[in-house]
Amino acid sequence: MSDSRSVGPLAGVRVVELGMWVAAPAAAGLCADWGADVIKVEPPDGDPQRSVFAALGVRDQVGVPPFEMDNRGKRSVILDVRSDEGRQAFEELLAQADVFVTNLRPAALARSGLSPSEVMARHGRLIYASITAYGTEGPDVDRPGYDIGAFYARSGVAATLVPDGEYPPALRSGFGDHFTGLSLAAGIAAKLYERERTGRGGHVTTSLLRTGMYALSWDIGIELRFGRREQTRDRYTSGAPLVNCYRAADGRGFWLLCVQADRHWPKVLAAIDRQELGDEERFSSAAERRRHSAELISVLDAAFARFGFDELTSRFDDADVWWAPINTIADVIADPQARGAGGFVTIDPDDGTTPFEVVNSPVDFEGYRFEPGPVPSLGEHDPTFPRP
Image 1 (cartoon, rainbow, N blue to C red):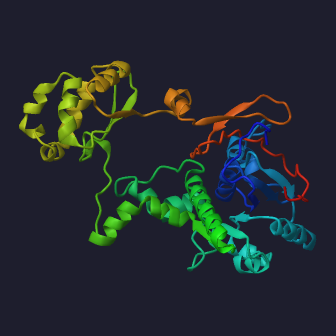
Image 2 (cartoon, one colour):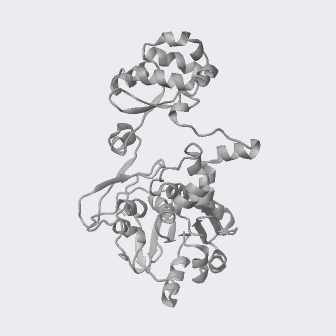
Image 3 (cartoon, rainbow, N blue to C red):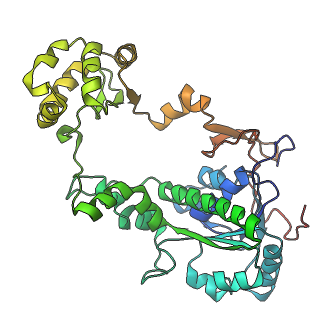
């Protein structure tokens, strides 16, 4: 860690991570971002996420941004927990730890004597924090899931994003994993607070499935209560034409955010100099605009196409029309608000190579200036750590 770092809220907390790919490393990575000392235990061939580009056919990689995002500021040791020697060394690490983070499948942990009940029997103050695909009980606890299977497909998220009968688009890599890692990091913080009161550790767990269900909980709750939900529609048949996506004349996209339709409708008309549309019966109220949604979307498409993006959005701002740009990733990187909001930080590698920017974690703490530590090479650190 850089000596210039201020003290994070988890300073003094030691985390041992036995994880791979994304979800558990993301949870432990947030702990590292927030000041914890995180020891990443890897098998002799390393966390497979280190080689994710090679798995995609990319060779001679200089850096692996997906691995860097979730593993900056950690220390890496190599241990084979399937061997007697490796298990003994791992037990010594757990004896010095406050938190153990893992996303290995329950059966694999049990084979190594690392199930929650076994570990907690040996280390009563330890917080055992685990991520599974489908939970710790039920018929599919050991079924492999990944975020695309458990968070996206099985939770209902994927099917709900598209109209009935259409195939969902592919999930962006790490999307559900990062939501779930954030869920577990919150659980770890709560459990640490509980331990301050009780002196006891315990098991805290979440799953990709449960986090996906929580993300979709409005829709699931409506179906539970009323046996139905609002169907997903494409933009052309949306029932909310003032909360919809459009394009300006130069092709740049934006989203109208006029949730209070009757309040915002006159402002939209003023922005585009089409006040006469307010006199049309078919657009005279929120109910009528919903009934004639396809017609209104067509009218607005033509109206917005008269202006370039900068002129149109300036008119929106002048008329107090709420909107947001549909940014590409390149747009986000260049967005002054993303930078003003603290969305990026710089890693300065220990080996003297060129510093590079990465995405910041999503929570800031007053009095803590986060400076990410370097990304550890495989087995870079000795497995014996005296407690600071």
